[in-house]
Length: 309
Image (cartoon, rainbow, N blue to C red; front, side):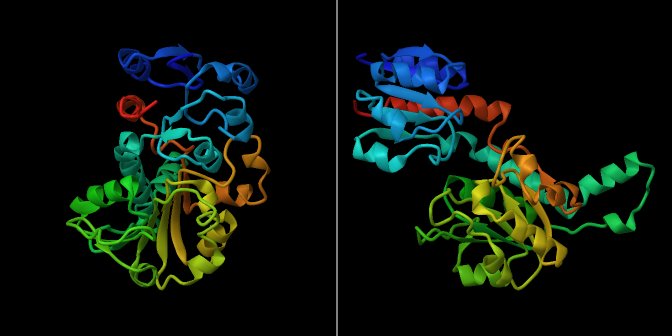
């Protein structure tokens, strides 16, 4: 039990290799169930997980020897942080491992929306050649509002720098971050000047359903909305209403309030969402590339070497 780690999810082999090099004994069981995990977790000092199941009070109570949770990804919202803190369990994650992937994906969604790629492609495949209705917008000269300026927001701003746009950012929890890529502003300036909004905040009690009818009401110009953060941050019905009203020109959503089928298909707003020509959907893959798969595990293993047991 001394230095045993249980991997319960699909992590790149480099994490296991590096953990062994650090002196850990690693049980790599990506197919293990939650029930099986509950039965054996008492024998481990660490658990490594992606999104397989929630590391909640029940699991943490079953793990009296647990010293750390290694989350192979950016967010910690599938871990009960308060309980972990109360039990002195250290939490490590790897936003540095997939911030390039998220930034590129967000810009890809934005370019596809602004240039009607989805509609244009579908029309041509159906025998329609319509240039006028597929006329797009240029990014150059637009103002992009970045909400949240952590690892993901910073990378988004940096990747936008070649497009000759004005990037402004708001972050409630930090100040003084104006740099060559972004200008720090208030939320009032975000809603006044933005042509594009890109969300990069974690899911917390404060951010849950943050982008709702009231929030969107305050924007002075029609906007493009990009969400590669967490689906629960956005009220999907409010976004669809603003699209119908012309206040949102397009939405690129990599994450949704409810994800995976069949539950997604049962949502009252899903039929409208899937038929909207102003929405591009991807299945929570912004940070999940072939490249980030390895980089996340490398970052996680590096941080593993820095924790004190």
